[in-house]
Image 1 (tube, rainbow, N blue to C red):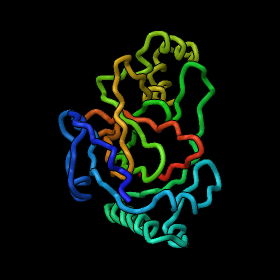
Image 2: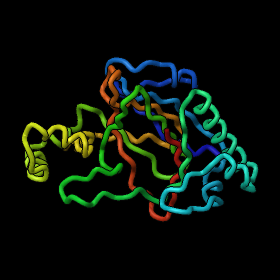
Image 3: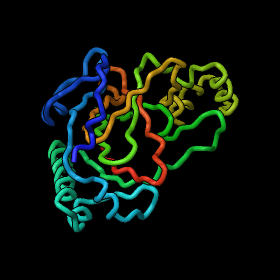
Length: 236
């Protein structure tokens, strides 16, 4: 079962393409490239796995033991082995992968002019050198967007003024306030922006904002889920 036949990996200056897991983890980000993709046309029935997993909360972490406990068809078993192999690869590399069954993420609705949830275009930040790995096996897939097609929200004058009013403190502490509340991580798309969907089955590595990072962090967002459909996402 080839469910990736309609997806075309875009030719984009920020995306590097590799042909193996080794290439994915050992290729350095450089220049404009801040997203690496190992494109894969996966066999197997991932929908069957989703249908047999139990969703405990809006986000339910699925262990290898949970997968192994499922009674699956031949196609379902093929999909399971692919997921288990990805988990082993990433764990062996030293990452901490999490397989999540998702109904939806929590929405941030505290401010009517600024959302800090993952549905907003954002970058990831870490105090140490790391990367974000992700693969959507089933359901709506994440988007990334070119850094030159977004504007950091804290630089939009009307938003910045509202944040300054929210801060209501010394001007010298305003920038620290923006970082502490993660406002500086979020971006808005420019009118002519063209988001890039990451597709199903491909394993991605995205650049994170950290002290040793030599490229711009990758701007991305979680998708709006398809009605009545769960996502199965590997992320770390």
